[in-house]
Image (tube, rainbow, N blue to C red; front, side, top):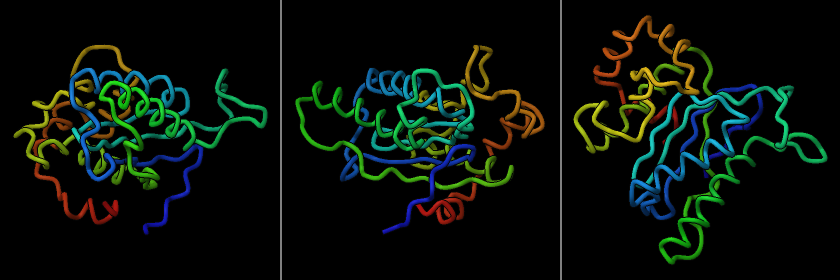
Length: 198
């Protein structure tokens, strides 16, 4: 069994998981929307999200867990902040309860524990962001990144307000034109998956 990366405040991680026995965890559009609303409730207060994609039977997130010193009113217990994995566990548990109730099923929905990989350095951050956004293309759900609705890619290109660090990411790629160009290039998926231990 793969040893889990220590998950701590102040670091950046690629997080991913899938349905137990590779079952679908999203069946309808409402499922995707509800999961994202729970993500906003449980995870946004403790992490900055750089990229995400929700696939029918799995998901990927690229997050920087905020420093412990931040004021997270309402998210503290008697001993201070909970460990960061607890906020994700709360998300998964809340979603599982709602999903099971809706589809009249019982038991676990996600594989446990969820996987995470420490991301160090801007080059790795960029590569993982590209990998996440290109996941639907890699799994042949679409031919082009912009065709898939359940990822952060289109949000980066929209003029809508967002919690994504749009300015920081665009500066990382140089500009929006290069951001698009890099997403159109063929990523070395196998090499990235080996490094991420997927």
